[in-house]
Amino acid sequence: MPLPRDLPVVDHHCHLSPNGEGVGAARRFRDAGGTHLFLATQNYHPGPPVTLEDYAAQFDTTEALADRIRRETGVEVYPVLAPYPIDLIGAARSLGLAAAAELQEAAMDLAGRRIEDGRAVALGEIGRPHFPVDPTVQEAADRVFVRALEVARDAGCPAVVHCADLDPDGYRELAAFTARTGFPLGRLIKHYARTALPASDRAGIVPSYLARSELVAEVESDAAPWFLETDFLDDPRRPGAVLDLATVPRRAVRRIAADPTAADRLRVPFQRSVEMVYGFTPTVDRDHPP
Image 1 (tube, rainbow, N blue to C red):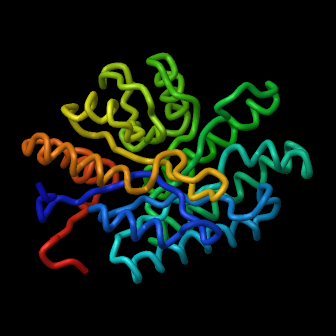
Image 2 (cartoon, one colour; image 1 turned 45 degrees about the horizontal axis):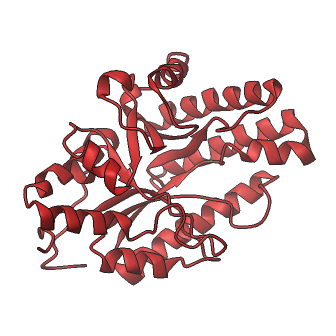
């Protein structure tokens, strides 16, 4: 059964690179039925950025790639910009921890200005190390995280969080950071969520679930907001990691073929959640593609 002509198919979090498959991956996404991508920036060269100019060049690359994908494939692309939180650890080896944290905060400010200018839709990935680190590093990372929430608050945009997978206590701990800044919990997104929890256990934070088939089936009937993502890395050394970029449209096609009523449930991650969290509505007309 084909996808409904007015159903957008949205991958909420992926990475693409001019050094990888790039536009070709977006073309595969489109050919599988995908229509909209949230494109998170990444480091396009070995090693973390160590100057603000490095981050400006990185963000420029993400924006240019988004423009090229729109032109060449018709897929709508929403850039998501921020210094990757784990960059703090690598940059500290050459700059020192204090200077690396200052660089992260300056790069947050740069990303925030671009969001205010309409060049991106969210601040991300921000967050905390997903593995044990020295307490001094954790403290610095948490300070940068608070600053990131302040930047997102002032820019009036969602914030996309990188951290370990969360249980209810983890969600509450993450939510406690927002109390320091007044950032709205309903715009804080836990990317790469791998555990389905009821809304009552998520402390108001929005999950972006990894689109594994069993997880999609588990959360499909949940109320908005929540998202589906692949976290596709576009790394030639790890083909298809984390999930292939065509995964979300393939999941949608299979779910609707098995049960046509699934189309309305899939409007939750593909339309209603975007409306609630981002304030705009993804639309598509498959009879008249761009």
